[in-house]
Image (cartoon, rainbow, N blue to C red; front, side, top):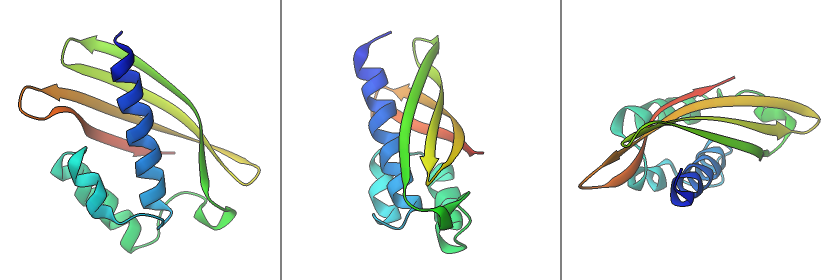
Length: 108
């Protein structure tokens, strides 16, 4: 796997968690996320539905990337809020025009 792919996944997930914590505006995700993901994150932020948000800021602790093929990768990650551990799953896809993009996101 290309180290740039893992770096993209790490940076994008950190940005996503910062958006979910209301530390960054949702619009900042537009550069790296597909419209469907952007819409879902916007809904989570508006309704304040991020898992465990009352426990404190999310801290990304682990990111694993598995290439599916040359243009797609599955991502699983762990993050902490206070003393609790949480997980997320994502898919990133590479396009010619825009490079890597966050195309799916699931929070647990």
